[in-house]
Image (cartoon, rainbow, N blue to C red; front, side, top):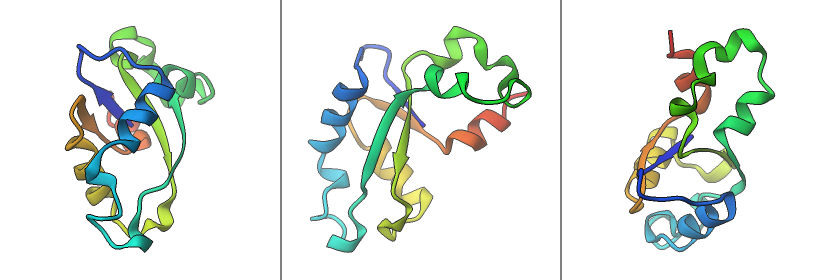
Length: 108
């Protein structure tokens, strides 16, 4: 899950373009087998709608869902979750990157 800076108002496609144009996720940084492949991007609020109610509890607060997207990433890239998160945060306009389920479960 990535959170965008408040000044950005992107669609899923706009975020995909932002990420695909970014050098930090480019295979030039990592060898070719470590290229990060993103299959799908959805708004966090759309993702949450499909979760069991007891799992997402207080996430219905619009402030928690604004400017956040869930990325479906191929885990075969060879990069760790931490490396992928670090690379995503380096992209201008991305404020935070976290594993979506860990983020959701971390809410009380």
